[in-house]
Length: 76
Image (cartoon, rainbow, N blue to C red; front, side, top):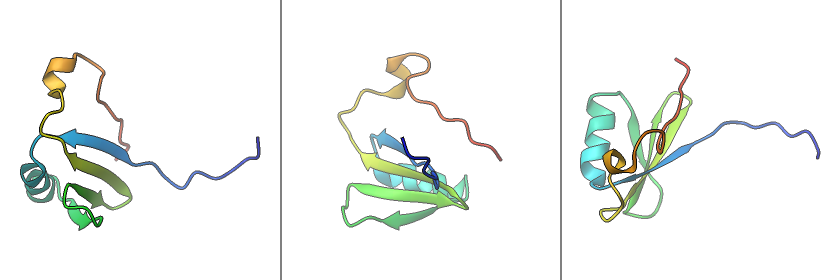
């Protein structure tokens, strides 16, 4: 396998309410929301950290999936 550089990663979250999620990430966590051409998706960015959030009102709530189903470790 050829050695390739990885320029970054992006976590993808299924969220029940995209507008509420965007408001929280912007006002509390200092992210900026960017459109991606589909009204059901946003990219949330703060510095080099990017998260793609998708409006999925019928997805299983994270609290119902148990430990370690959704996680990421971010170096600050």
